[in-house]
Length: 206
Image 1: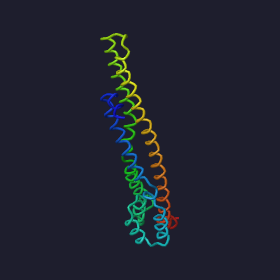
Image 2: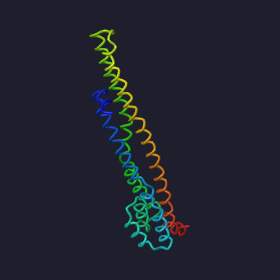
Image 3: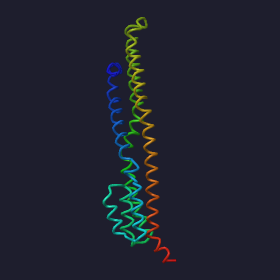
Image 4: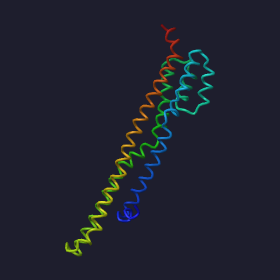
């Protein structure tokens, strides 16, 4: 591996750094974006049951004791229960946007690495070809061995850039899909609680 890094030239250094950063971000997001951490089922069941029983203070206390996106969404709905349905929905949307930004944190880094890693490989390829043509200019085409260094650098950097860029792109798309699914679950839970705390008001207005 060290031989490849050396043979690829200086461009291999940022490519290697990109691979390390991409792996670190991916592992961190995989740990954070667990369904049991973001949308714990047990919390949803307990909070909605307390809301059905109109034990709102107990439900709020339960939400405050949990460090989960779902808890913060449900807490907001419960705290705003005395307001109009439109107001509660607006506040839920605000909380939802904050939670979405938190869930998507780090994903732009993966998207950037997926874009620049192949370009760095292309940069190394251009550098290798320039080196090859300089050797041809000085020594001609007679000595094939003297051309091998530039050609090798060109191929290694291209390979390295694609090796980093393709998996990072796949990882980014996977995590984005995971975030979308979690946000849909949060939205569904928020709507359920909204119906519980604002349903009586709608029936009374009718």
